[in-house]
Image (cartoon, rainbow, N blue to C red):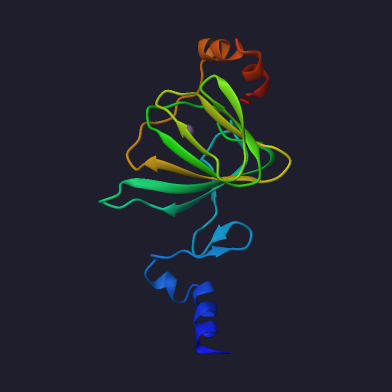
Length: 165
Ligand code: MN
């Protein structure tokens, strides 16, 4: 094995890049070197079959986080809204999302901005649906719809059929 190949192999095992954390190699199964697979949220039953990997924790000069979420077939994220913005890029599979009052189909490398105060929810189709989601490090807590909010969402039949609580 050449030195170069050996070096590459060592990187994959986390012996080189892991020392600084500046590079996180992409690994099989949509995982990244030294990045743990976490629960989507700490608690609750308002989501299903979804994991979280924090790829970038934020920096003093770049106070945002980059998270990779992956929803298993049939799963969904929380139906929520908040004042902070999300920018999402699909990386794996296909799915659909509620964005405001629209349900949109999403495929790899589509980019979606979730505006402040906009209801949103992501659902996987028949395969794992993975996406990168950028957020500010300092952000407000998500809000879930109350009865009035739900009634408003359900006024659109497409949205009523799509949402999961
Ligand atoms: Mn959100």
